[in-house]
Image (cartoon, rainbow, N blue to C red; front, side):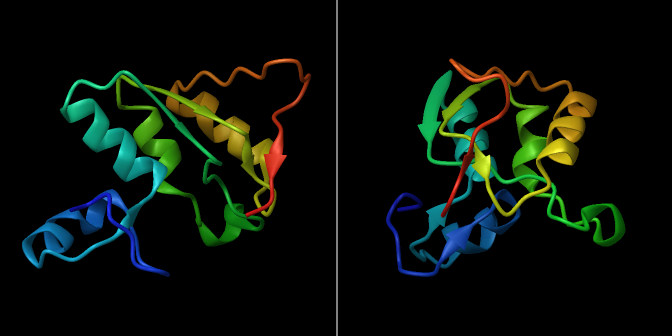
Length: 115
């Protein structure tokens, strides 16, 4: 099962074919969860935190697949915020570029989480 979890094993959408074919257990990233949920008709899901553009990401191009998938999947993701280790202004800019709406309830800025 994709939803079963082994400690330290996290599957992004690019990993799905090998994880499924080998019948491995893995947790899923927001990108993988959003993709699979949209395939089966789920319109909304909740998660702890989003990935995003890492600090120095403008040099390293270290950008989470979460942001690209959220711009292409017809799904809403409810979360506590973005991971605090990220470059939040660049994450929001990347989300805007992807056409992803970010709404914050009772906050003027995107909340961050520690994970």
